[in-house]
Length: 118
Length: 114
Image (cartoon, rainbow over all chains, first blue to last red; front, side, top):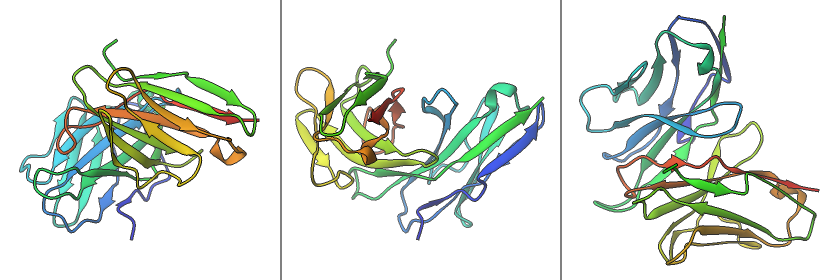
């Protein structure tokens, strides 16, 4: 089974509108973390937001928020007030595994390409 | 710039040559990870290193690929006798710990094999 599933290969959103990028994950661990990264056409990987499995509040960072639904094993990224500069690939990632205090490996999804339309 | 530094940004090699990719982690980060990204795909884990130690190399091909993170200097990913299939973007990331802190990425090295 895929550890991280991103089912939307491509998405369009109108400038200034909000958009949700889907991510579901599969783990049997109790302690894990979820991340979103942005990769613009220039190629660099930019860390956006992090959610720990024990965090009760949804993570927010400026216009980014993570809609964490633990029972459904989903960690969707919500971008509010989209801007043209938000056009990029977006990758969901999960770290899991390892004994208490031990190393946790990170697995990435295949990404969603977001295009913001003026 | 206190971020993760990778060089070169672009590297062209002919089949059979060696490729050396360098990565200097963020200041204060002692954990380094290498990933490979093929066109239109996500990142695939290759190897995780701490200073002078390889912790997890489960994603590294068994032949031709090696990685090191010496006590002094950058981490090096070495690919010997490159083949066309090695063409990819190679990303290095670093983190402050290996469990809770996010990994911060360099800009990647785009390796092209002629």
